[in-house]
Length: 397
Image (cartoon, rainbow, N blue to C red):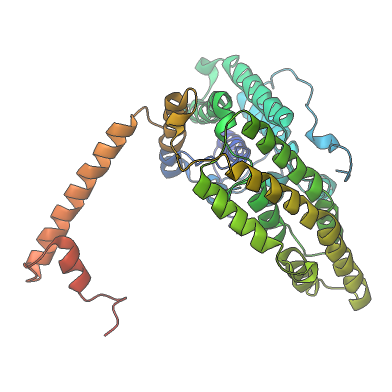
């Protein structure tokens, strides 16, 4: 999913790229800033870590979401004690990113960020879905901003200053978004826990060894807890009148009902596991069958009940929902929309300015198309009509 490459360059840029990609990964569903993607898409090697790092653009594209021991909160997700700033800003980039990713096991798996025992431990965990965890993440972002501010930019190279600016932007977006966290619905058909968790297991989670298979089951055993956290959050929001629009609830309900419509043995969480473990070298058929049977049991005993409980909640909420979808219906909705625009565009443009820009671009592009079509002798009809009639590589004749 994520390509590896290497570009030998200034080591400090590596640390910033790692930091940026990890922070982006930790923001559920947050679109990457396009200007940074265009200008900063590069992968570098690091002398500080022996392993190669993933490129920023690769991780940004891979992320959408998206998102320990089975019962208690994973120990690696607890708040990390504050430490003194690293001697150099380059070292800070790496140390801070490592702290960030240790709290984000799902993103650490997707990036293959660590190695050995540390990565294996994270591959057994699921990222908490609680308000407390989100607030701890925001607190860590604030700590990162404060630490960055203590570095003397006059002593930094141009690369370090630019890298710090990138990291500062991402951390500030995490902090700013906290004011509008109530408008991120934890259960939805695009990026809710009901989508992120199955996607993690069927697409992202590695299954190359017997150890990977055990980690898969450890994570599956936490589905009920994590979905329970998302459901509790959705319930809390609903009781305050913060509900998804009815058409979102309908789409989410249909998706979730389909997910549990088959017997557990036919659920993708089991069938994908069975298919992929069959390719594990050295895993005997009997051992594989036992692993698959455990997965099926977990889906029956924990996953399906968790989905059923969430479905029941959304069905109840649907009775009070409307088809109004705009953020304007919520307190500070206009400010929340403006904040989302900054996240998705990295600009301070208003919604109207972005809309007007789009209209101007459509006019400009259609003008260029009109000139080209005229040169081909296609002068009758609108640009759309002439374009549809023009033969091309995808036109069947």
